[in-house]
Length: 353
Ligand code: AMP
Ligand code: MG
Image (cartoon, rainbow, N blue to C red; front, side):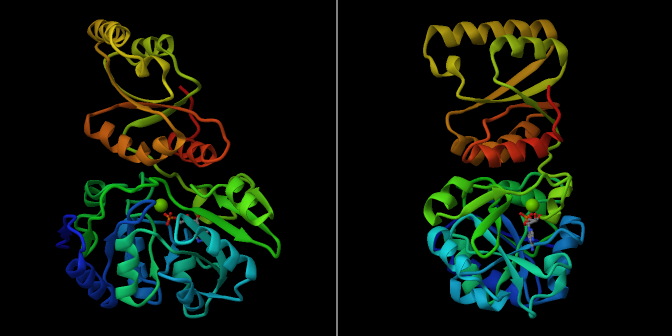
């Protein structure tokens, strides 16, 4: 398949129009959202949606999120919408929140993995919104990666995942959130988070004054079917680490002698100091590189938001640089830390260094 790829040049009217035409004719379009890049198809067409599963190699029981441009499009995708869903949307939409609702009969079962429910989201990215509006239909769109791999969060990553597999790829720059949306299901008066994301349990609790719980671990009850599969795995093996320090780093250099190690650090004290100390540290690492034949590539993050935003781009960069192993610092599971810990756990298969 020949894929058209458009670089970013706002206001992107022609490309969006062309992509909408492709979607209306049953094709696949990769488009940016604020979370990750999506691989979209007309959510009303079972035949078009089946192409998504082929392009990704996605298991058929892993449901897709349906993207809409406004609350008024909601009634085309969902049925029996409870008042709490509208309240949630008022607070957090457009944005990185997907709400699981009863499926509208016009949404084919292939979209929902055979479930009677559908996850619906209004993205805030202007290209995503413009594309849904121009298409005039809800778009079923999972992340635009081949199944099991990290979600693309830049145009370059989207191209390397979907070139030759989608009809068109639109550029919208780097994704601002960087991890997939929060998926939440509702009862009359409470919410269950099936997949943590940038809209946190605390945020929902504080705004709506309702009970918010996390889902049971996916291995116990697969409430959110996709959660049982391997996810977010780059080429390099990912390993988790507790709080890092240079003593640990030197140990890993011996243990992974001759390999390239990518290091993801959170709030590193030494790296934020300036001048002499940094130089001494780099000299020390360099000397050990010469001794062990190990190469170290480091990325440091100074907030949970930055860690989430850059995580998959750092994976892609480390893969490009030939990393054999990526050692990622674990995070405290509060607020956005819960979503980060979830992605890190899945990328690593729960393996600690
Ligand atoms: P992706 O589009 O790749 O971000 O994956 C979408 C994820 O949303 C799935 O893997 C599920 O975990 C979740 N999801 C989508 N639809 C539903 C649904 N109807 N019920 C529960 N979870 C869902
Ligand atoms: Mg995905």
